[in-house]
Image (cartoon, rainbow, N blue to C red; front, side, top):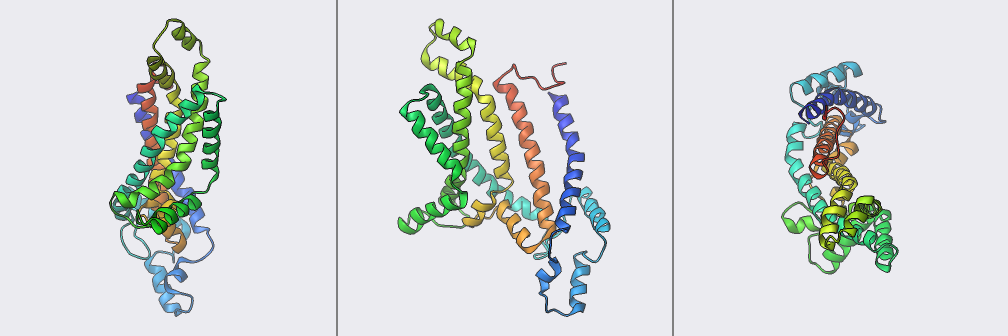
Length: 310
């Protein structure tokens, strides 16, 4: 396992360089000029050239790329065109808010998703199975921006129970967490249902039933534990994507996280911000996948990563 972790971490280096090159190239190819976004189109040519030189847009694309790589090697991500703040400082400042939102969403989605999916599988083709499966399909179909606005309208404007937007204590966290949790919950319901049904058809379950094992022990130890591998995969993917910033949810609720930060950078064509958010997202996603691989071994010792069992 140590060799596997080290190998993954070493592979992260060329992966980051590849992601950086692709992202840098495509970002620079986007239509529009960040200089005109900064100063406006009616500004004098002298000021435009001064601003272009200040942000480094007066140099060739290869020169800009290698300059950005040199910054990364120094542990920096450049400065925002608009605020002149260090992008890494902003990401570090906003990441705890995104982490709170992602954790809140998964705390809601995971237990309910696994429980409801397990009930659907145990009571296959029953009324409860059909109702829960139908609701989960609806949850996957409803856009996040629509469910967020409906929750805001109901609990903030109509009932006046929760603040409609902003970043703060747990009261500000509830609505965006629920909004973000709904699609993850629906996905976990469907994945858990399929996974549990697969385990129920395995020979060792029939053997356990024939031995007269108590139902609670059978459900928790034999069935649920062996059905968790696909669930952990979905959990890792959802949690990793949320840690990269839930762009729509954070924008709708005015949550000061990485997703909203990235959206503002895209709108303003703030290239250092866009690059920094993508690079940070890549690192986060790789680390989450690594943790998921490690957790596989904890849940199911039969799982062996190629090369670690030699």
